[in-house]
Structures are given as C-alpha cells and as structure tokens.
Image 1 (cartoon, rainbow, N blue to C red):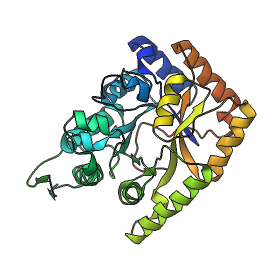
Image 2: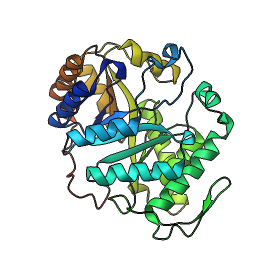
Image 3: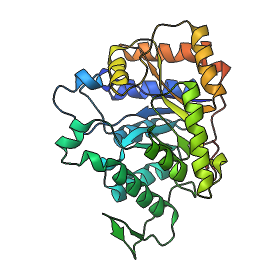
Image 4: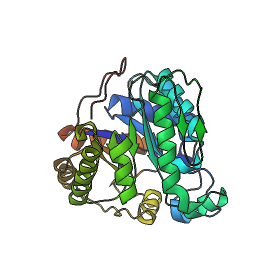
Length: 315
C-alpha cells in the first residue's frame, strides 16, 4: 500500500514548515504529499470545511516538488468543474515535466453547492462538466494532433506540447462514489479514489468500476483502488470536513486497531490511502507521521517507485 499525507489545516503552516513536512514525508517513505481544493467558499465556511485557509493546490505542489527529489505531489482533489480544462491540462503537464513525472492528479465533481453558487457555476451541471473536462484533458495529453468537439468546448488544428512524462498522461485519481463517478473512473481513471466507504463498500464499488471498464473495452487491471479519507487521531478541523462530506468520523484507536483497520482496506484491494493526522504544530505532524511509519505503515508499505523515468503506470 502507498500512503499520501495531507497537511491540513493549511493555516498552521508556512513555507519553511511545509518544506520540513515534505522532507519528512520523503524520508519516511510516504508516497506523496497532497493538497485539497477550495477556490471561493462562502464566508464562515470553517463551520463546514474546518478552516478558512486554502492554498492553490498546484502552487503548493510546485513548492513541494522543488524541495524534494523522490516524493510525489498529489492534487487531492481538484474540483474539476470549476477549472478551465485546457489551462488545467497545461498547468498539470508543466508541473509533471518539471518534477520528473511526480504528479498524481486527483479530480472530482464537487459536493459543496454554496461554492459553485458564488462562482456562478451551475451545480446541477457538475457531472456533465466533469466528464467533458476529463475528455478534453485526456485528448490533450495523449493525442499527437488534438481535436475535440463537445457540448461546451471545441478545438482543432492545435498544438499541445510538451506532453506529460508518462505516454498515457498524468495518473488520474477519480473521486466520488456515485454512479457517474464510477463510470468516470472506469473510462478515465488510473485509480478510483473515493472519500467514503467501508472496506466492503469499496470492494463492491471497485468491482463495479472494473466491470464497467471491461464493458467499454478497457483492461480493468489498469485501474487501482484508493481511499482518500482515512483519519488517524482526532483533529477538530479534519473531523468537520469529514462529517460534512459524509465520511465516517474517526475515533481514538490503538496502533494495533489501526493496523487491523488498514489491513481490512488492503484486503478489499486498496493500494493507495490518504491519511489525515491530528496535529497542532508542524512538529506535531512530523512526529505523528514518524509514529505512523514506525508502528503502522511498516506492515503495508511498498517501496516508492523510481522517479527518474515513469514510462508506465504501476497501480
């Protein structure tokens, strides 16, 4: 299993401490540091999201990539309907090329309607927009002569260079648990990456993803299973956002209980897991990450993939 750490809430960090956390994550063999995404939530959103401070995920990931050599950066996850997909494809590609192929691109359709309303976006269109945006991004990443004709975006006779390091494009981690999200993961995903679900629920959902993939002529073995929302310890900020998004709120457990819980996810097929820690200071977080590696992750950790070249995807 590969572990991703999200250093949330972000208002507890500055540039130096974020660099320290990235260095610790690399040293402790975490696969990636991830950053979640909220562009313009309403005033007072801390009551729902657990905080008011949200960095731009691409900019924060760029900072991490510049301070490390092996550690991956995870965009975990981008609210895809709120982005211009052409510009996003270019930004993610640029980060991927300059980091030596160390980007994991997590995307979802979003769940917080108040944010869509404030940006003037139609919340009920988010599933259709997410599908079209993914189709645009995949076309730009993989086609030598990109062209596209969709309901809202069309282009032809264009050049899109450079391409991502991996010929199939930057690995796409597809969030969400509904029927449209499962179909999206089957068509475009390198990893299905839901935020909610018990091990049994994830196993059933993953079986559906693989069945859908086979139905459109895709090799189901190309798709990995992840879980983006495992909490270790009780942090009020992360608990708020977990509860609001429908995730199970964590509880205090022993290291042995956490090993058993993660083991159940591993048995269900989970190969990628994002871990949210309880912490107050950056040093608290580094100590929690160290304890996690020493007491828990060592039972599951896979060696990190090489970073000099990424010609293929290894789920």
